[in-house]
Image (tube, rainbow, N blue to C red):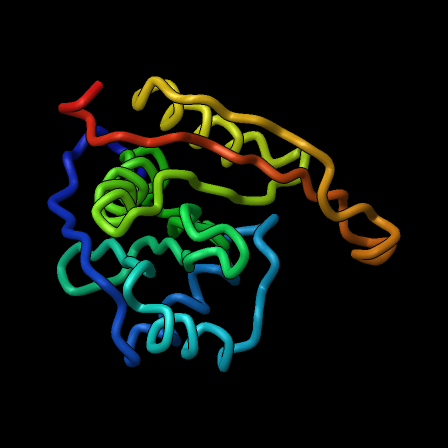
Length: 170
């Protein structure tokens, strides 16, 4: 679907039945770590306040999973964001975050955190674009070294972005 056609997609919070489709998108989106189907069902049910899907013609084409950080009451941790490769290049990842950030702000979560490998250039570009759009900061630090992740997984850096304000308040 990499053409110039404008997509008519919508974004909504997840429901239980979204779990299998979210799993399938994650499966198609290396370098995302693929979690169990059970994990995606939990995300779509117990973390549904901040887990969103993008749909076109009743087909899930992207998702973001996030949850309030248990130790930083002003922070939303973005666990994964994935877009079906057939729909890359249409701004779906950006739209998911643009939908998520005001929801977080409304609930007092003014910082976003995520972890990303150095080689995940697409995710790095996406989060850089969002921090620029909101005119806010992004601090990168060491987080999970290879020694904790195992030999086949690359080091994960922590990105802490914010504080975020509603775009009208910039």
